[in-house]
Amino acid sequence: MKIKIWGARGSRPTPLLDEQVKNKISAVIQRVQPRDLVSPAARERFLASLPPSLFGTVGGNTACIQISPRKGATILIDAGSGIAEVAAQMMRSLNPEREYHIFFTHFHYDHVQGLPFFGPAYNPNCSVHFYSPIPEIRSILSSHMQHPFFPVTMEEKMARNLQFHVLDHRPVTIGSVTVSWRELNHPGRGFGYRFEEAGRTFVHASDVELLQSDFEKTPENRRFFGNADAMILDTQYTLGEAIEKYNWGHSSFSLGVDFATAWNVRALYLFHHEPLYDDAKLHKNLQLARWYAQRLGNLELEVYISQEGMEITP
Ligand SMILES: [Zn+2]
Ligand SMILES: [Zn+2]
Image (cartoon, rainbow, N blue to C red; front, side, top):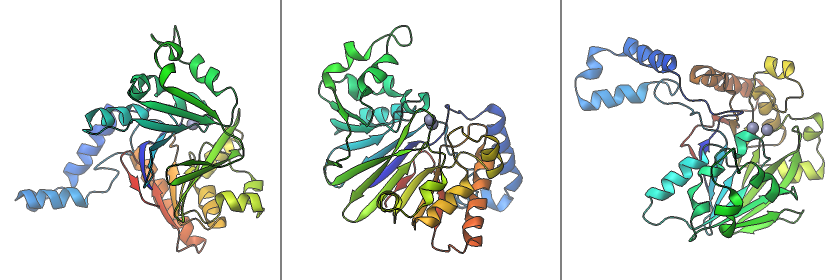
């Protein structure tokens, strides 16, 4: 399977601000030397040498992850504002996907707000399947897409193309991928998903405020979290902030490193970025997370920051 990140921001969409763009440009200008401008190749080398916090951005769209199985239709996790970009890309495609399977972690705004802009759900040639363990999935999703919040309703304009699936404890198979789920500690209930294909595993655990019980070596925990090749984990805060925001439903990046270490995860992707953190702060947190993994003696753990457009092959 291939995974693509379309939105990694937590809580609310977070466009780059004018001042942040100016700061990036000014930091780049301070670094440039005359020799970096002598040829197109030199300019390319200079740009490639810039830190990712200057030449790029983690992006401001809220949660949406795409999984493309080796065989079978497109899977999405959540419909935050990033899902509108999935739809836009499909519109540009010469051979657009016609079948989508969207797994909802929960229904907070940052995980559903892009749904009204997901073009395939309006297209009679497409079918869109929605999944959640919450039995009221249909009424919950349609209640947020109606007058006066949006000019067209889900029931009028999408319903013919939609199918709703309430998950029980049996895994679901989509093409070559098997999907299982478990409940996570988050206000109003939230769910993590584990995707397996040909011996490779990807775990999506967001939103979650990790509990001591998530670290316990029970068969259930081991089955769900254990030995993931890649894990996207809610690491919204620094440790200090996570303590201040106890019970808000999110975790710190340092606890995330502890967690990935406890469950022998190969690659950890920090996710659900705090809207108040700019690219510089997020990349600093990434460096601290890597440093902390080394301090723990976990030299095998790879730590990355989820960024829009990033592709992952678990
Ligand atoms: Zn969220
Ligand atoms: Zn939430």
